[in-house]
Image (cartoon, rainbow, N blue to C red; front, top):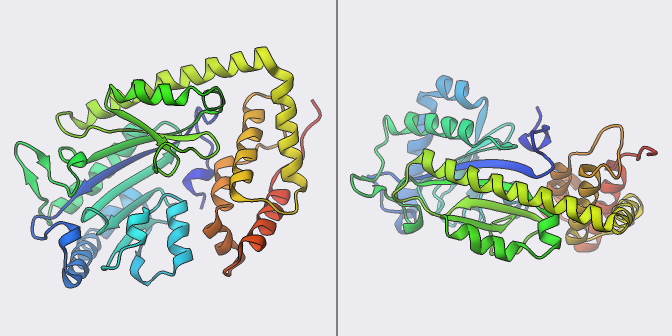
Length: 349
C-alpha cells in the first residue's frame, strides 16, 4: 500500500501536502496536563472501546487502522513517527499513558493524551483541505456520539491551549518555496499573512526555520470563525503564495538560468556519488534537484518522490531502515548509499 507521500498529487511543484487536525477534550476528565496516570490510561481505553464499537463504520471512513502504544515504543520508533508527521514531539515525550491510532497508509491518525485528550488528524498529498475536513468530521461525530466533549455555548470546543479554543481546527498546507526562500522574501511574507490570521513556520512547526525551502502555512485563529471560513481564508492566501512563488521562479530562470542549471547538476552529482552526507546537506541538495525537475532542467524516465526521499533519510527513519541504532558517521554513509541508489539516471536533453 502506498503512503500518502508516495502518491502523485496536483500542483506538486509547489504544494506538498494538506492537513486537517481537530483538538478535542472529554468533559469527564481534566485537561491532559492534569491527568493522573490512571486517568490517562482510562482515557485511552475509553477511545479504544468506542472505536471498537464502530470498527466497521470507521474502516469504511479511513480504511484499516491499528493502535500504537507510545509509552511502550523505543526512542527511535517514536522519533520516526515524529519525522513522518504522525505524532508530535510532545506526544513522543509523554510520561503518562499515551497512544496513537493510525491507518496503514499513515493518512489518518488520532493522538491520544497529547496537549489535548484527542487530536484527530488527516493528511494527503496536494491541495485537499475540504475532503480532509469531511473525513475528520465523520470521525469526530462517531466519537462524540458516545463520549461527551468539553464544550461551551459561547466559546465552542474547550482546549488546553487558548489558541485552539473555538472550532479546535488547525488546517495547514505544506509548501515548497525555493524561489521565495532563496530571494529572502519569506520574512516579509510571514508579516503579511499574519494580518489575516495565518502563520508560516518551518517544516516541523518549530519557529520560522525552514528545511529545504519547505514551509507549513496554517490558520492561527480558531475562535469566531467557522470551519469553512477558516479553510477558505487559508486556501485564498495559499493561492496567492503559489502565484508569487511561480512568478519568482520565472524571474530567477529568466535572469540567471545558467547559475541555477549548474547548481542543479552539481547537486545531482553529489547525491549520486557522495560516500557520506549529513541530513541537512542531503535535504538542501534534494530541494535543489527538485527545482531542476520542476523547471524541466533535468528529466528522467520517472521522477523520484522527493518528499518520500526526504523523510526516509531523517535520522530515526534511516535507523529503522537499517534495523539498528547507528551513530552519526554510520548514518551519513547509509544516507549517501540510499540516495546513490534511489536517484534515477538522467535523460539527455
